[in-house]
Length: 133
Image (cartoon, rainbow, N blue to C red):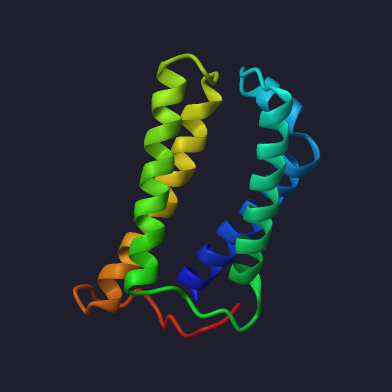
C-alpha cells in the first residue's frame, strides 16, 4: 500500500506542476530565476498538458503500479531530468530551486528503481503492490 500511495502522490504532484506550467509558465520560470521567450511559453504550456495527461493515468483507481521495463523507463527519464536540472542550475539558468526539483526527481527515480528490482524478484516485497489506495 505504501508504494501505491507514493506512486499516486507523484501523480498528483505532477498534475499540480503540469497545471502551473499550463497556466503560469512565465511566473514559474521567473520564480526559478529563468527568462522565457514567447516560444518557450508555448513549449512550457505543451509540457504542462503532457504532464497532466501522463500523471492522470497514475492516479486512476485501477492503475497498476509500474514494474519491469515500464519502471526502468521512468528511472531513466527521471535520472535524465535530474541531470538536466542540475546542469541548468550549475549554469545559472535556474536559481537554487532547480536543485530542489532535481531532488524530487531523484526520489522518484529511486522509487521506480525499487519497483524495477522488485519486479525482477531481486528484492523482498515492502508490501503488496497490487493494493490500491
